[in-house]
Length: 279
Ligand code: LIP
Image (cartoon, rainbow, N blue to C red; front, top):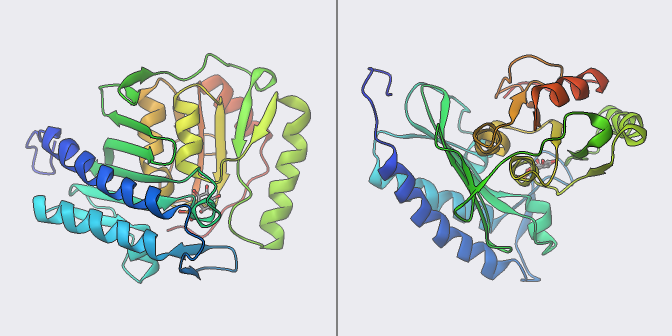
């Protein structure tokens, strides 16, 4: 429903973005093995952006704004270029053009396009596409979550002791951030089946949505990293909360997704928290 109460048919939005994602995915796939990618740094020495990140975001924004002129955009590279990260009730596409840029730079095949459509500040469409592995994760509000057209569900893991947990080391060398990450890793290791990091928040969340992992948490991500993954998890039967418990705050740069509320709450109780500056 739009801000003025009009019921919006999101079918055309979904079909349009799927076409664009396939074109952009092909471009990423063709370039992933290149050894001469143009790489620049953003917030620090290991926070990379490539010309492919910038080109894919431009293609998505141009294509969607041509089709839907009143739609708004929050893109990782547009914000890095100085635009405001401003989420309103208007239909807003939230885009990470290459999530897992470090992986893309190293030709490590775990990068994806992550794009979500929010209306009235709530997710309507979420798509995470890894073109290297031809994995298209998609979800629409109230219609379930899918991997390559096959319905997916979260696992039935309910306790840390039975769980595989996704966590990240991030793209920062800040001493305090790394200390807390290692402290959480040390605390969790003896209690869980295992810890994993794909290097992409969106793909980590997709793993929880399809039941390949049981929970994921991270401090320091941005709304574009998690906007699509949140809908994948909730439409697959899972939960997405703040890592200290309570409702997720999409601009807080903190997230915890899990197969069940019980597991999410047990994990949240264990975590040493980090409170990054908000987006
Ligand atoms: C990445 C996130 C990942 C995080 C990295 C980086 P990017 O996004 O998906 O979870 O650990 O630091 O922020 O920068 O590849 O789009």
